[in-house]
Length: 341
Picture 1 (cartoon, helix red, strand yellow):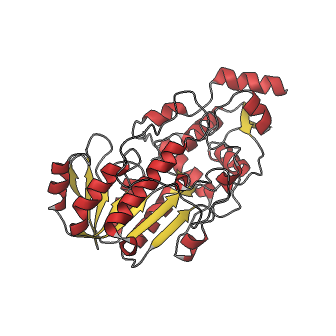
Picture 2 (cartoon, rainbow, N blue to C red):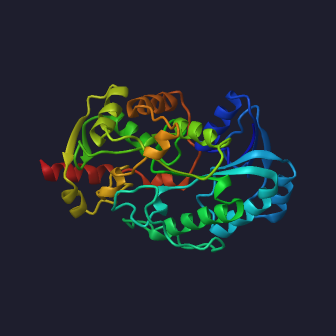
Picture 3 (tube, rainbow, N blue to C red):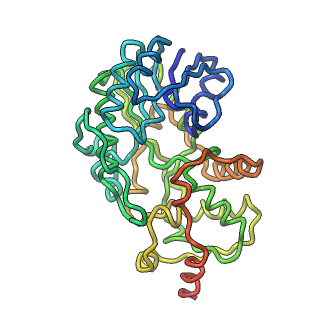
């Protein structure tokens, strides 16, 4: 197999490249080369997806059996459409890593692959996809934009040559967002730790290496493939935080505080206490089609342990603005803990 990885410098991208090389595949990566480190053994092409001349130069390096797109999170549908059109003559299949946010019901409703998706145009331009600083809640602009990028790929490659993979949360070694790393560092500090909501609440994060493996499994597939990537029911917020205590050898005490109390205190969901969201759909993602197609999800405790081992070796995630948004101010945490006794 010969594949092109759009991205290849951050988190999922290097995991895809490393796995593909281990399979004996030929790999080309395309990115701006401004952050991250190239994986030895892959051909690297530098360029910007928003520059037509760079896309034309990239296409000349083909053909490929498949394009793997891991880097469209900040792009408009129009930009994804342009890159898909430039690469379509040089690639057999397009494997697009999207998000469950494309569903209209996210994060309030249970989701299946046939749940309604946001209406969006394939050639739509940029939109205000980010919530203002300090805001808390769900921004539908992001979901609409991602739905538009999916449509851009499908309109160009057709359903039979497209794989749409919709993960919820991806964790693991190399994470640059700061969710699991924050909890690990907080566990390491010990003391009384503000734990959100109900410890038995189901959570469904998947490991970056498992996502990478399934992404590559899609490259030789034929026909329409649409899958949600989510861990099976069984993992909980309690098991996640206990695993963080265990791997850091922490004597910290988890103090569980109900959602209603945290909301009254004005905590920003999803960021101040990473992975905490009171919306019921967050833990109701049906990933059965992916499992039927061969997806495997390792135990969350293994992801926690391997991420801590990665951090403990002195590894530093790729700098990203989202990192600073995660984690509660220590004084605020202390104040809430004192208020609940």
